[in-house]
Length: 446
Image (cartoon, rainbow, N blue to C red; front, side):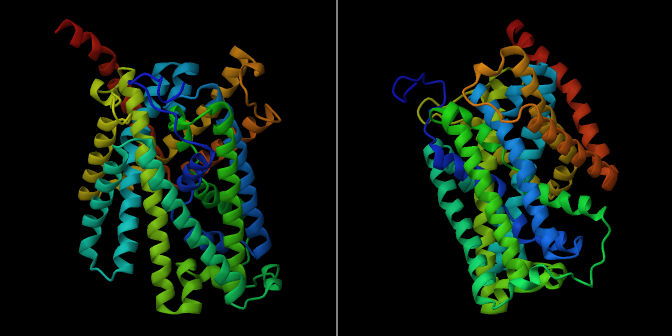
């Protein structure tokens, strides 16, 4: 449908390939690449395995992205994993995913990253720490306000801040590979200060995979992608390949500029690399870059999460008002307001970090079951019903599901308390589901 002939109660398809790719890049690249490489360096013995882990993480994530590309091409509507679970496995699994993500993880992530944005902004502007929460709240107000005016306004905001975060990474590359006067031979040298076992690779791969997370947001907004059967797979693939390239090159820049031992010892490698050339100004410049990167992520998470809420509301599993789409701007305005207000409450109360930790296992379970729906779609409708098909099926979806299950097991072993709370939160969704099942009947009988 064109914009002119589409119903006023539906979204408008205004996202092209480049805007879609910007959403993928912006949803994946937050603050992780500016800090996580130091953790990975601690768990590796040289630059070669470190770079290999980042390349491997990109390949494993690409397997998931290709699966999401087929799912999005099959069902190019708003809602993402929630929609796939509802069709394949029924209303209860879909609700439990939406309950965990749209009502807890999404606003918790928005709150956490907004605080990170505010922290770096205050550092760059030399503001006292007491300004962090007000700046974070102001950022969410601004992001929600822009997205109220539809996907074009939201996409413009995302595009601008995606370019800014890519500029920050480009600056890292120039400093590390050119200005720092390091040597590439040191990348392959063994770091005698770090003796690690073969099993440490698993522990090093885990933060890499977490840093690659966030590629699913475009599927949440699939109802606004033009010619989605063609453009959505292209945008997903282009965006993830761009992210992987940025990640590998950024780590190469860290290794050349700081050396493996320097990277492993750093608490803030991006700031340390910039400071090595520009002094304190370098740290300030990088703080601005990280602030731009995290702000862009917040905008994407708010837009994607609100559309999952809207889909749930339209299905009758949340307040009906949340399921409405504004007839003028074609945006889920009530959903945006609900998610934004809840994120602000989490910032003010300071409970967002724990909530995000508590829902990590639920998020990865959602990814595992979401990809598993592809097997159901293939069995029900066959390969020919989709204009895009995952190559090497069923190997790639099987590899990604196994990878996700491995992440879940490692998370349970590493943080059993948080994993247990995640399962409790999911279980609490069952009685809530029962209440919302009865809610329409109660309204009808009123």
